[in-house]
Image (cartoon, rainbow over the protein chains, first blue to last red):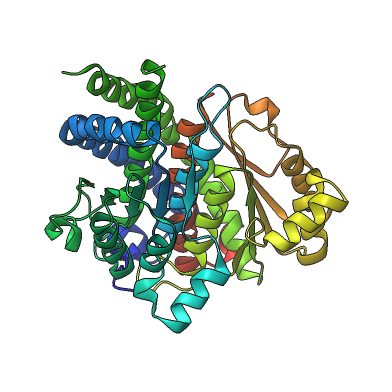
Length: 222
Length: 197
């Protein structure tokens, strides 16, 4: 896939460790220090995300709530770690914590029969597009997750979803990649980071807050 | 500012204390990674499991090790026990859902392996059984939990997120397991276990 994640090499992040020889006790100290620094880094990134995207998240949640209220369903998709994040997103809507409203949501990554059949017969770029073509209806919601913004199958699926009248939501990182140039998207959240891991962590907060706000908006409509 | 936009700001602010708390566990993370690296050096595999959204995180964690985000890093053997729905539903319907992970560990795991369970609140029965089974089998046990740490099963390493909200716990867990991967790589690349174990 073109969603090849790239990060700075570990050696560049831990120059201290790569100057041999090092006392074993120092390794633990250095690793501990690095863990603290990274935890602080993700806090800063989340602050940047809410500063840049709060209004967008609120508008997206309102649009999603409107679709759900009218009988729409949610379809989520991504590759690798983003595929499991799509699974978690769908599960949060479909089987939420106690007291929350159950909403129809499905991950398009989970059915290995469908995914391998489409990959084998049509091509991996089409594994989500073909599923959306089969199950998606105008009024539904498509959520694509990618760290680079360049995954061909995610970009294609979002384009197809837009053509079919689905609400399109994309979570990306880096500069947004090819998704940044996709003018058919209703909502695009680009996480301003070059680290695959930090992007996924911030995206997780965004999708959780989206879910919380959808629940809130639907609760007001009762 | 609309009420929903205010809710977004509130939601982000509300999770900061618990997510900052990840940094307080840096020392525990380092020791867990040292021990995980030692198991990989012995030829051990990482076996992950969880329920609900934590099952998705268990799969995410396994793919981090199997196909690293950093280009050129070695693939390390890892498997998530929630992925095989035939096995999962088979065990669940005959032996009960509390057995779905323990059964697979008994059948698949060896004493050099690592059992890593994720739970939002430490109260999943199948996770308790799996970790107990893993300990009996001599596996290294790692638990990512939330809520009251006292509810988590006894394990070699416990990383507990300081929140009762399963969504916030999941966000802390993701940072935990990204760091578990990254720092395990550091130990593996630089030091033999005999020097640090």
